[in-house]
Image (cartoon, rainbow, N blue to C red; front, side, top):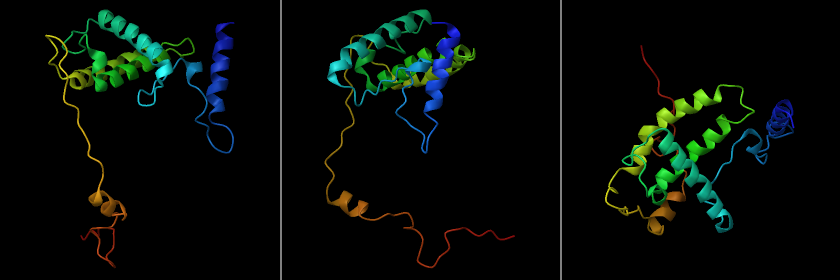
Length: 172
């Protein structure tokens, strides 16, 4: 298949998501190079393949761009926020270096990558220099009576007294 045919197929797939009475979100982004992984809903049946795909890319990008272990440690896959950031970068990299790109994808990816580097450092936070250190995850208790009481009301106008205008008036 020629490059023109690939581009045409990608354009048709992309446009299909914007036609009809309502825009469809069921059209895959695969045609334009994207392969999005939702780690929250990832089924066990496909987990090993997705982890392997991401691992290979993380190893490549850390070597290619000489990213130190203080930013992306060897145990990166055990740091949830880091996984999400790296996965997003991987998806962007695949889409922006796709053959169907008009030519701005690579520079766009590098711009996003530069913006993401501080987020990567923050997502990891350090501490695993001598082996993985499990961080204490934030936890939630089961919602109780306070939750039920609060969520039984909209609260949108809680600070507005009946009859008061919601618009602040300005006086000269």
